[in-house]
Amino acid sequence: MKKWNVIALIPYPLEQTAPSDPETGGLPKNLRWESRILESTKNYGGVLVGIKQRDHFDYWNTFSFPSISEPAEIHLIVGAAESDEALRLVDQLLEDICDDLSFRLQSPIPILSLEVLDVTPPVEIGDERATLLYPLPNGYKHPKFGTMVYLNSSDTELKPELKVDFSSYTSRDRAILRWYHKAQISQAEVDRFLHLMVCLEILCEEYSEHVAAPYKASCGHEILNCPECGASTTKKINGATLKKYLTEQLGMSNRHASDTWRLRQMIHGANDLSTSKIEKISEICRALKCSVSNGIKIRFSIDPSIPPYFNAGGAGMSQQVAYIGSRAIRKDDLHFYINR
Image (tube, rainbow, N blue to C red):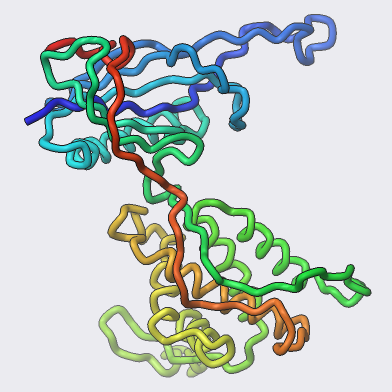
């Protein structure tokens, strides 16, 4: 059994200490910022955890964050045979810490880099030790922040000209393109999926072949007519209609259509964003992007024989990269742990 230090680099928001301009009540004439990091340690079921300022970060200002921040490190000391096992053992705890800090500080807390370093005692500064590194700038991403690049997913016009006219666009046309553009710029697969679903539901609103069924009680019995007035209880079934539209109009497979509707239920709280619950999200998201893109071509009367073309199959590549190697122990690596 070895000891490992799992070191996560995070942005920690600074506090503005200068008061408002006393004359105008607006921004102060000079902005001053102070650290909010309270160095501390806790023990969580045998895992020693500490948080501290990160020293000597020359390129911090090259990164962009929603709030003005400074670099901080979370250290998690855990026993395990190998580096990947050590990371697995503290992964949930690390996510819990970041989610908790994000809420309390009202700022996102991404893991900008993560290192799993061998600190098995006896250990001294300068010792060469094994390391598993998820480096800047992509760092380490928990499932809710997972990103993917689709390979060979589309063929586009090489040199498109400006569109001749936009006067025929309706408000819903523009809504579709806005949400589609949001999907294009979204980095996390979860966000991309949700934005594409909005596009899909707008497109499906004009689909005339609705699937309808009478009201079904919780006991499973169908009630064809209202017992009071006799009116039919038949109404549009959203899920069945959407799946029918995906398969019959947009060419999606039955399996992907069912998976898409199932994943959509996350907006109702039916998904905890854990690895097991969104393990197929990249496959589903790619198929959805292809179908929605084809739906947009149909809506805007774009000839199917001209680009852009879309491919629901093929490979995807994660933007999270890890390196295995070794490096010399530094003083900061042992800040919370010296031969314990």
